[in-house]
Length: 216
Figure (spheres, rainbow, N blue to C red):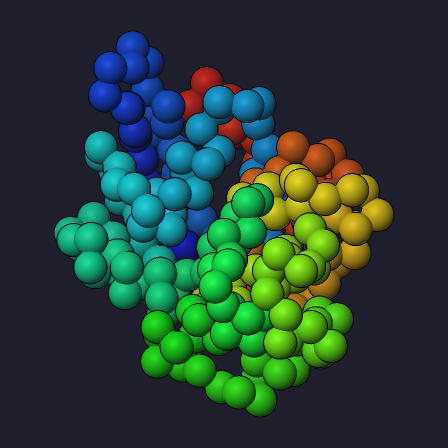
């Protein structure tokens, strides 16, 4: 099993109620799961726990056989570099780097930079003619394509996408989403998509809904 969560709980300091209350989840390699829920239901929190960006109060999170619970911050960072890729709604590109350098950034951190693979991703995502440009010179859709290429360049085993098309118009969102799913499927990685879009959620193989801190 690529991903296994068991009875995960999370309460933020000062909060009266838990954001996550005994969440369990499993995802196999190649699995594609849409995670839906109202704003504030804990979707992003759950994704952050899976990605090692935050830690659970109790329960366990294991990715590709590695339990995140005992890992310190550097250990979780190594896991993100080598095993987990995260795509954010806000793109989070480095403005001082060119498109080519942004795409290579994560792979270089992981010690997995493959120039041919990066070039192929850029070609597939329609970025081959923009490699010498900077993020500010690109449209929103182009910036999200760069973010996808950067995430996939190290060949992660698990891809986490937090509202990756939330800042795009519907037509651009559909195109970018289709490319993301196609590229992830080709690598055999797992994909968890957090989305408010019923249209996009319906296109995933599995769907779960987060409400009152629990998955259904």
